[in-house]
Image (cartoon, rainbow, N blue to C red; front, side, top):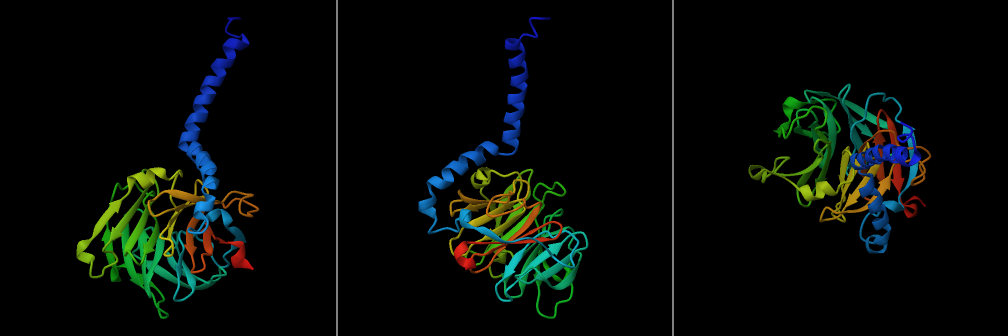
Length: 306
């Protein structure tokens, strides 16, 4: 018994389980990949700073501003370049809500028949796509100055049902207007980014295609996906993760090239972003972010804030 209590016997017996637990935690949270990328990120900074968004340069300019008049969970964000405003959806009391670029409510439109409305994306003037997370349905809707409510029965719909697993379905949307691709983020289990052509309906509708890039998805060192944003200028895709508190910029080949951390002390943040759910970007590259239940953030490069 005394032999078992000797330090040279006891120490390995304690350290081995601890190391196993640390390794499992590191794998679960993708900590090793994230740490290695942080080293690589600055090594290729000179290569990418002039031809990418380069997220490390962003600083918070509006932090944790409460969206007055809104207590329900905001679940997405998209920018409308025609109206120069933002749109979000809530899923507890389902609404499509228009916000000013300062995070103020401009109007609220109740949603009927959209299920678990989780994401909204601007497609073209007056045209949006809304996703139903649980049923993995997409709805093409029309919104103009006179719109006061939306009924799913009036919309063009697409149902996919890929690996249905409850509240871990279609969490984010982004649209490439040049390539006419709709990116759809599946939250997790497994985490995936689908690319859909032919929806919303146009002359390509009969050529509906749904593809993914498993190699790209495996490179995403995050636990989940909450939102997507496509940058028309660079062709790069931004992926937001709530659980990892991170935004990742992916290049044309789907490789991570830069990140924006949502943790306290990073990018000027006084506190960590609690539950980031929606990400949008305007023509100047300014990033807008919403966090449940009703917080609003803005990130911009210093030159853009002067």
